Image 1: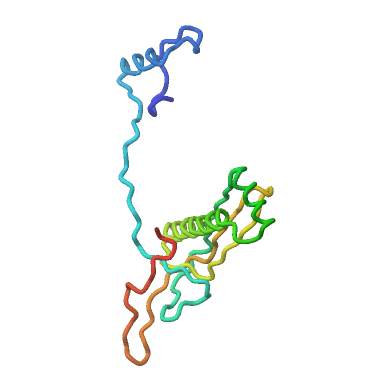
Image 2: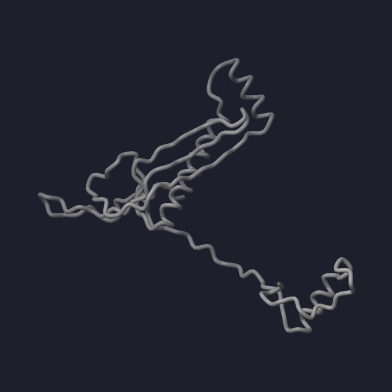
Length: 175
């Protein structure tokens, strides 16, 4: 089916491979059909904050809904020459700055992917967040950020009767 319409009426020459794109377009036009054109969509930036914590509870907030587990995953590899340089660095000792940057960027991207999944489920917080890192085939690093997506509401302060300000929820993994 082309353009969500059946292909009936296409002028076939008994060899489908001989039809050119121009012939297909002309035949479609003669039947009043057109290709579905991709519409450029303005990317909407989600600015809703998500609090991401490693604790199971958030002081000053009450968990009102649990949306389930969420995760962000990334697998990255460094090029051969970077790996070779890192091997030489292990002989001399010291920090391997290229790998430090790779893992920092990977953790940030994994956290952001987890944040986006939490937002997609309607959560405004992630509790019990953890990172898990593994090596794949001695050439790739896998980083996973995971936790439980929840909705939290501020709790009234018992003595002062004041709720925490809405702006106290940080941007978490949002970039």
